[in-house]
Length: 149
Image 1 (spheres, rainbow, N blue to C red):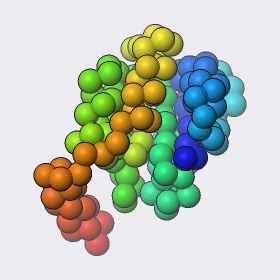
Image 2: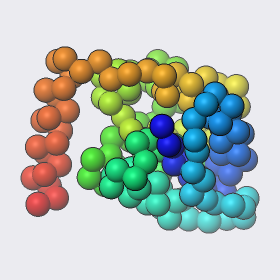
Image 3: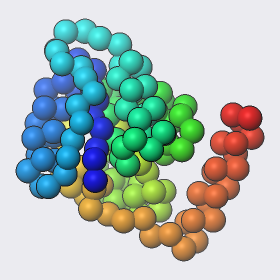
Image 4: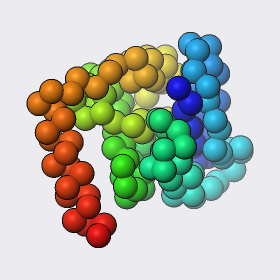
């Protein structure tokens, strides 16, 4: 699985740590910026990752900013994207199990490095449960089509 990752200046340092961690546990990571801790605009990086996931270029994405809120707002503007803000293990697991989230958003100013690694590991290794949740995702897709079309 190829995973796109992006961050703004607030998430830059954690992005580097998470990128290395993801590679160590056997996934390929594509870094879509930022490449600096200088102030940048988070929508630019959220757009790059979300667009790539939306278009099916990458199966999943990870976005990191100060709180994760801005990144998740931008990412969820894209068709076929289900971005989940997860700052604990339970929401990381449930976002995959019940919602088939394909973009993980985290807040670098909210969680520490150790927890971030565990969230990523949980999110990457939890499969979508399907079953009754598939019907709900189909409803979500219908809503998305109504809004976009």
